Length: 479
Ligand SMILES: [Zn+2]
Image (cartoon, rainbow, N blue to C red):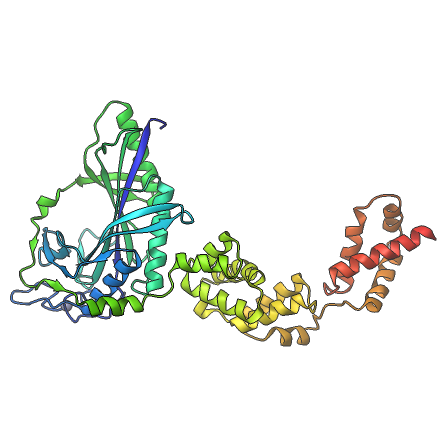
């Protein structure tokens, strides 16, 4: 599609990790029996009045500050009217004309690309309709009704599906750093609607956009956008018009289907929520929340590069999770060699977490213990292949490296006298290989080193073994 430019905007919903709902005291716990976390307020029974959850407001302010938004001292809740079985009040309390936070931004692609954030506003979630296999009924679970959400609306600054996924990833990292949302996309705590349109290259007018709803993985965001861009390009290429539709993505079939023609804002008959006062935020609350914001991923990345001397790639991987970054930093502080620790964390540690499907808080090797293991390698106590075995043992048992090395007798053999004896016996055992090596087949050195490693059950110091072998072979050449 050389003639079209892609314009993408995202609306991301993040469920806030508060104990109670947005406007009532019901629990927000995930996974409880259906309809056990409901009350007259969230069920919208007549006469029940909403009360704002201040923890949700603080979380939204936090997100606004973390993304460079202006936090409005006065914002307004509004009713968004729609009729659907998962919405018992027939309206959702959201924010419309006067959102809590506006005009922010974040960076993706290693700081190269800035994506504007139009607004971050507060609203409540809807319920869930459940359809069971082989059952033609719809079941409604109202536990999620009234759970606090923030909606983060981006500017139409995104130009490719890859960029959209990176933006979504960055948002997830930030809400997790802030500890306001667990970012669990499978459980729907973080989900995304994408808006996409095409326009002729060089044009500054937007084309008609379509919206794909409820994408709950980075892969789905990317694939749904790719599919939709292709569909629009095909229609435009045939000289047809794009309808402003809302589509649903089917991740199994890998295609989107038109759900309904897109509603306009006036279809929702927004008006200020008469049961709530204007949301008045004292300056003191904004200041206090600001002090609670931890070092954010971009700042941490810069510091890892400038203070610890890490390559940008390492810093990016390590700071993608606050917990991993913390683990890395604690280990690097113990050892005093950031790059060596980075290699271990990005390699063995992340692989172990992935294999065992655990997070770093459940990982058995403490930073102090990993530093001690790396120190064993650096001092020549054990070689790298042995260290990786010891690592796996530690990850299973939580034991100290030095105890495992001692108990299993894994100490590296660096003593020249001991190695020399092995070298001599290997050369005696493989006279043909020795002869071929001396006749010019250099590659056989590797084979002979392998035999020394085998004889010592992997414990020989590889470089010393190689040096000694070369020396002994040269002697035989002379004799
Ligand atoms: Zn309730």
